Image (cartoon, rainbow, N blue to C red):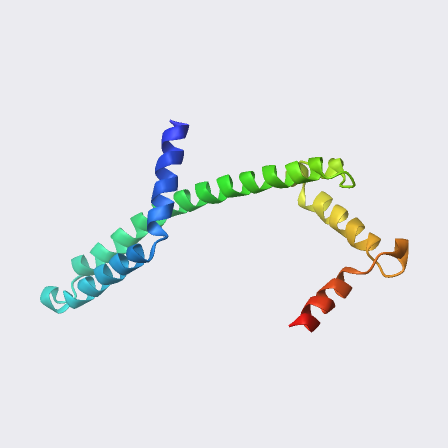
Length: 136
């Protein structure tokens, strides 16, 4: 079941991310709007687009979340492999995505503290940003 949903979700996410999907949705809304006068802008006419868009949005939330979850998990696995493979990297950072927001903030602050100019002879992270801006 899980594999089937993943395959369907991946194909749907790819399909609805294409320009043709946008064009189809846009044309459908234009057709709906053009039919307004024919149906006297009735409650049923309005209900059709409201119900349709609500259902589509509801289903798309699950497809998008599934795609983002898979992408995030793949990215974490790749980053973990890089940390593991590079000798000076800190292996203790592998899996930190499972920590709480507070724990992650503490780690981020400690890393930034290490980058303060003059400390450990390393440049500050803003030095790199300033260098990139000057290159433009």
